[in-house]
Image 1 (cartoon, one colour):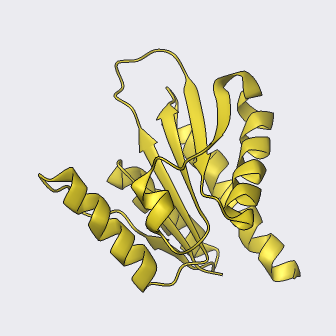
Image 2 (cartoon, one colour):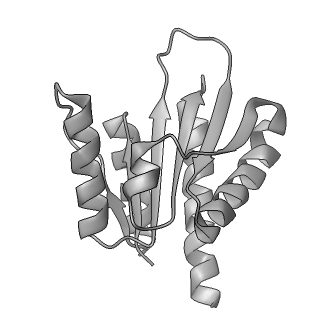
Amino acid sequence: MKIGLDSNNREFAKSIVKKIREEKFFLIDMSIDKHKNEGYEIYKKTMLANATRLDLYIGIYFKSNTEKKEELSIFYDDTFLGEYFSNYIYDNLGLEYGKEILSLKKGESFYLLKNIKTPSLIIKGNLIDKVRFQESLKRVIKNIFEMEKCN
């Protein structure tokens, strides 16, 4: 299984990719350098995701650190697996953070979710403790790889 991980926090993504690869799983860092034209940046990410033939795309976008309210929204594409993995992540993060800060929605308005030709999801929000979230997400991604090994 090949999972692509994208984030607007490059260090966050690199750290997760490194930790997952140490456990011998194949996780691709989909984060690219910032571009002045956000539309071009999103187009480039879509092309990269499609060219690498991922089995799952996960985008993580943090809001500015000025907000004190913790919240996470998980958006998924219209594929069965996109919705399945989104629900899986929602349930696992809900156990750790409580579902009152989480929401799960169809992401038909996201260009990436509409145009990446693989099951995809985007996590957007604000968390004060990103290190804790990083560990939680690493555990969830590792569990997804483990599920695939069982099949």
